[in-house]
Length: 181
Image (cartoon, rainbow, N blue to C red):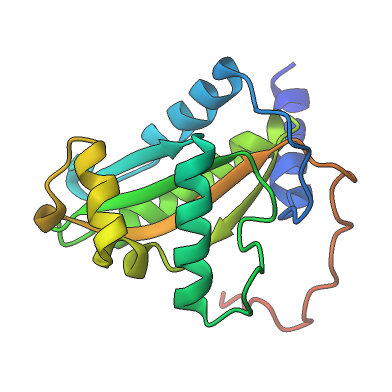
């Protein structure tokens, strides 16, 4: 049994891919909770637990943040940087911790892997730092009862049900790793 579970876990890690097309259906609260728990259980420097997750499922907020993120990216007007995903998790970190970027990055990785294991599509979307530096981002932090002067963006996670399945694995470069014995 242990070997079977281990292989299943490793297989999920190897096969996980980022999704660009989502159904409009919202993910369940149970799925969201499991993804968030996976993020909460990621390692953090000195166990400071510097990350916070702001879950956005409100359409009005999603639309505003989509436009802001696209503007920061320099994307063409109308480009959906969130690919129609119905859930956005903005990962921020307490700037009191010197490791907040690393902590938040590990949390994002855990959330994306958990989402895949649940059959959800997910994708890391950059520019959370710029989003939370903007007035709209500061408003989002206030809406989440967080002090905007003490948090900075690390990354965004979009989640939803894939509309066309998961992309196929990509071919990796041949010199990806080195072993020194």
